[in-house]
Structures are given as C-alpha cells and as structure tokens.
Amino acid sequence: MAKQRIALLFGGISSDGQQYLSSVCSVAEILSENQYEVVLIGITPKGKWLYCPGELSLLQGKEWMKHPDCCPVVFNMDGTKQGVYKILDDQTLSFLHLDVVIPLLYGKGAVDGKVQGMLDMCGIPYVGSGCCAAAVTMDRAFIHMVANSAGIPTARYLTIKRSDKFDVRQHSNAVLDTFEYPVFVKPAGSLSGVSRADNEEELAEAIKNAFTHDDKVLIEERILGAQITCAVIGNENPEASVLGEYPLETTNQDFDQGPPEVLIPARLSQDISYRIRDLAIKLYQLFDCSGLAAIDFFVTPADEIYFNQIKAIPDLSAGSLFIKLWETVGLSYGDLLERLITLAQEQAETVK
Image (cartoon, rainbow, N blue to C red; front, side, top):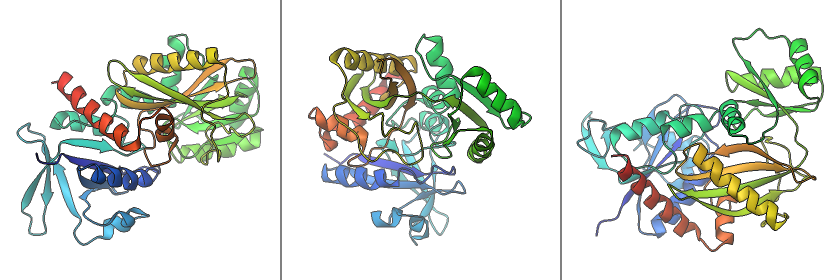
C-alpha cells in the first residue's frame, strides 16, 4: 500500500508567520517515523507559495527560501486532481498528489478562513476547522460577541478600529467608565503585539503597537485568575482533554512570551474541572470547530469561569501544551497526529 502524502503548510505574510516553525519540524519527523510521506510547502513573507525540498534545519529563520530546489507551486482547483503543480525552472509543470494538508500557520491570510476556503475549492482534506470557523475564531472581538450571545462570560472589552479617530484621552476615559486599569491591549487577529497598560500613557503606546499588527484592537479588562487550557479534538462528537493550568501568580493574559511552566492536571476541584471541560465542548460546537482546538479560560479565586480565547490551530510541536495534555491521558504524539489526519479525511467526506 502506497504511503499517504501529507503536506505541511507553514510560514505566511503576517508577523505571526514564523510562530509555528518548530511545529513543522516536530510534525514532519513523527509523521515520517509513522510511515507517511511528508511534503513541505512554505508561504514567504511576500506571499509566494514554494515547494520546499530542503532539510528541516533550514526552517529556522528564512533559510528555507534560499534552497536552490525550492520552486513555486499552484493548487489545482478544477476538481480533476487533488494536489499541487510544481512550476519547474524550465516552466514545465510537475503534479504532486496530496492526501491531506496540515496547516501549521497563524495570522491573517493564513488561518482566517482564506487558506481553508482554497483547500475546500481544491477538494483536499485538511486538519482543522473549516472556512467560517477559522475566520471567526481568528478575531478576538467576534469570539467575545459569539460567546456572550450564548451566555458565556468573557472579560469586558472595548474595540477600536484604525479608521476611528485616535483620541487616547477618550479611550482612557472609556476604560475608566467601563472597568479600570490595568488593561490588556490586543490586536484582534494576531498572537503578537499584546501588552499591558496601567495608565493613559501606557495605553497610548499599547494601542499604537497593536495597530502595527492589525486594523482592529481590543482593550480588555484584566481578569485576576489562573489561566486554564483545554485541548479538544473531534468532529461531530468532540472530546476534551485533561486541563492545564498557568497559575495565578504567573499568568500574564496573553503576553507574547507565555509563562515558563504549566501544571498538569490543573489544581481545580472536580466540579470546576467538569464544568470547564463541558464548556470547552460547548464552545467548540458553538464555533463549529472540527479537527482540533485549544480553548483558554480564566478561573478566579472565587471559582468564576471566564472564556478567554480559542485557537483553531494550536501549536503542535513536540512538548507543546496541546500535545502534553493528550499525552497525559495516554494518547501519544504519533497517535494524535494520525487521529487528526483521519478526522480531516472524515470531515472532507461529510462536506462532499
């Protein structure tokens, strides 16, 4: 039986494009060990899509783009073949069949629904949520609105768009009227550019910094509590993992560099743990996720639960929190990736 060919899609044009390069190396190595044929396709910061035949070590930084055998690729979108055409130096085309694509991406133009929509048009199964779910979960403002509409508490927040008149005094007064300092300022659709502001001056700098990463920014109240993460996998019948905890004394509410240690399992009562896992499944289904997602919450000292964010494509590198949570309950790294590939193929069959 021929090996299944799995394409790992990495890079991207946003500032988050390099976030998951370590995932590419880890996933490629374990899939190769499990008898899959692995193909690497990278998106450059300028938006070029390249077949990457080089060593995994070249993925550090931008060295992979300089490999002499890199060549442009275009996806076949007429439904006749499932894969990509490599454009060779002599401008001839070489077709490469793909069984499944694993997007190891983050940022606009990557996991905001555009790539997923293209793969749907090509008829290629892919790991993770579909076009609509990817787009909505990429936007922090939208996930707050959807969760709140379902009666799920989140931190209170204010939204600013680049097109709005920038008046820091007005924004600061709105903060004081709505909640209070400190606040966290977050680009709506980026992992980067998150910062804390304790006063009006810091708020102005935080907003300017966030706008370098996105056209929409959230000013969010601080929730004083431990950050809890639940990993979810599945399609119609999702499963929730054991919970991981960033303790109250170390949590930083989405700073660029996360806390150094996580506690597994989380130090929560059985009742709170069950409530969070049930809530994670509810949110997964509410956002119409498939394949996998990592869902974060805050739990206050009074056992109040607040939904924080959902990542439709979490970090899948060896030793990442998502992997550790499933390994804790006996699902190995290799078995988890194989499960995700199977879920992608099953989901593709349901939408045909």
